[in-house]
Structure formats: structure tokens, C-alpha cells
Length: 280
Image (cartoon, rainbow, N blue to C red; front, side):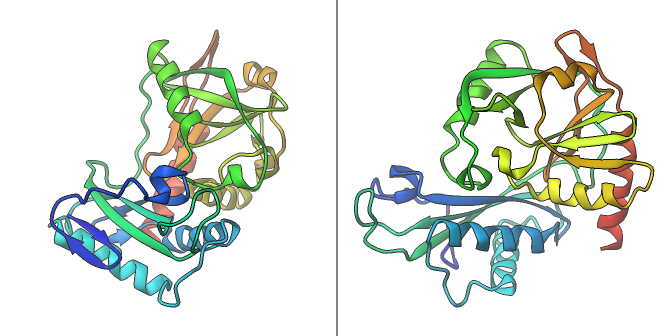
């Protein structure tokens, strides 16, 4: 069952070919983790969605409050009999039909879908995990590239490339040849006591887990946090590298070309993240 504009519908509805999210990528989405009814980092997700809608010049409905959307998410989970399970929520917003490139309206509709997942709180996955650069296409650094829009063709093609080359993931470069993110999350490098991640100005996604970790790292006095451009050459010199998103939390990278990484900081940050979730 899905939730379409507040109505729970049996099965999946077939979208019109005029749907602007489908026809023009004129849509946004949030991927949200819910653990036994607890929506993780909901405030961050909500305010990112509202900011993204404003940037996309979408009309935000008067009833689109944090409480309203939270209730709709819970209603969808209950309708799918998943209240006692951990779930992956996809909240999609698209501009309503009408027009070509120029829309006839800025009003929106939303869809909430839910899928059961096995992992509750975050745990360290220390299995072999290899990445490399994806250099066929590049991210154009701009405010739009920081949004979670329906236009993810670069990530799709990059994922196919990774599969064809037996890689677990790929690192995306921007047009200045700086590493900005992975195919499915933000990237952090560790060298000594310095933790580095790409700045939003380089075009990386404004990830919710990225935000959580920035705040967590700032509270650890023995580490220095740096938001600055990452050269591919820096990866070879790093002690540790990990990828972050709200579903897996922190994914340590074990290998990049001939470089093998440790995962000590990943363990520490995961522990702090889980404590924060339980206390929150």
C-alpha cells in the first residue's frame, strides 16, 4: 500500500505519462529510516525537503507541517502492518501535471511508500568493500546538485559501471576533478587526527547523515573537521575512508586501488551515532 496525497491506496498506482516527476525529473525525494516506529532524524529530513521545495520553486501546501507529514508516514507504515519492524520510507514530491518545460502550476502532490528492512540500529559492516573513481561523467557543482531530485541518471550509470567492474561503489568527481561523494552517500577521509569531507560548494549532496556526523565529529576534541575540496591523490594517503547515508549509517571502505584502509574511526562514530539515536 502507498500513501498518495494523504489517501492510502491498495497496491501501487500507475502514474500518468504526464507526471512531471517522470517526464522531466521535476520532483524531489527523501529516503528515511524508521526503527520500530521511531523516525530517525525527522527534523533534518523535513527541513531539507522544505528548503529543496523552495529552491525548486514548488508551492508548499499550508498543511505541509512536520506533524502532518509525520502522521502520514506513520499511517502508511500502519497500513502495511510494519509498525513493529524497521522500515525504509520514500517520501516523494512532484510538481503537478501541466505544461512542458514551463509548468502550468507550482502546486505539488506527494507519495509515501514503505519497505521493510532487516537492520534496526546501525552496525559496522567490515566486509570487503572496494571503490574506485567514476570518470565517465561529472557532477556540475551548483545548489541544484546538492538536492535529492528525481534526476539521478549519473548515479544510475555509475552504479552500472561499478557492477560491471566488480566494485562495491564508485566515487563521483565534479567538473573541477574533485571527489564530491559516492554513488549513494557522502564521503569522509581520515588522515591522522583530521577528518575531511567535501563542501556543499563542490556539489555534494546535503546528506542528512552527513549533517549528523558533522555535529558528532565537532564534539570530539581530539579530531579536527575540515570541509574542503578532496583531490583523488589524497585518497591514497588517507588512513581511513567511509561512506555515509541514513539507511546504512557508516560504510567503511576497505580498498581503493592498491590502498587498504582501517576502520577504527568508523567504529567510534557508529557507537556515538547509536547512543544519540537511543537517547533521542
